[in-house]
Image (cartoon, rainbow, N blue to C red; front, side):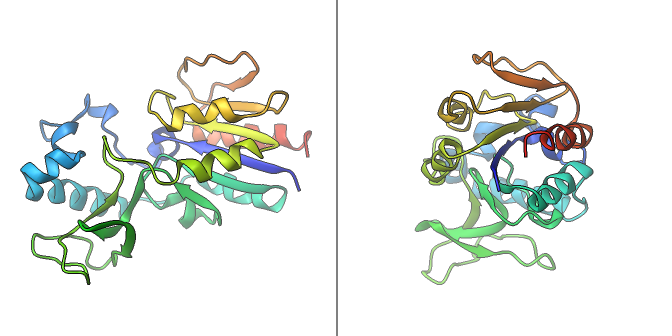
Length: 230
C-alpha cells in the first residue's frame, strides 16, 4: 500500500460546526487569543482559560464528524493513511481514522501543570476542568493543549511521516501557523501534493494540485483522483 499523509487544519472541522478563532477575528467573548491560549494567559487568569476550554469541550460534544472526516477514514481501505492534524478535536478518530497525530494537543484530555506530556482522558459526562482539580502528581489539571509559545512535541514524528509519504495532502489550513506549515518543506520532490481549500492559499511550491472545494466535497473529489495513483 502507498503511504498517504494528510495535514488537516480548522477548515477540516468547520463543516461540523466547530468554531475557530479566525471566524471571530481572534477573539473569544471579546478576549484575545493571548489571554486564553498562552502559558502567560493561564498564569494570569487560569479560571478564564479553563472556562474557554470547558466551553470548547462542550461544543465538541454536540457535533459529529462530517463527510470529509468519514471520507479520509474510508481511504484506509486503499492506502496506509497517516493524519497529522492541527485540530484539537477528536472528529478524525470518531470518524474511524486509526492513525492520527495531534500537533496542538487534544481537547478531550488534560494534563498536570507539572507534566505537560502525560495526558489524562476527560470523560464526556463530566467535561469541565475546575480550579482545584488535581492530577495524581498533585499539580493543577490544565488542558492538554499546545499553547502559543510552547514547544510542539509531535513535530519531529510528523516530519518523519511526511518524508516517507508517497502522496501528501493538505486540507483546510492556511499554512500560516508554524511549525505545521513547514511540513510542506519535507515532501520529497516528485511526490504528488494535493491542497483542498475553497479559499486561495499562498504556497511557495509550484507542484501542488489545487482542489478548490470544502472539506467534504474536496475529499470526495480527492478519493476519485487517488484511485488513479494507487
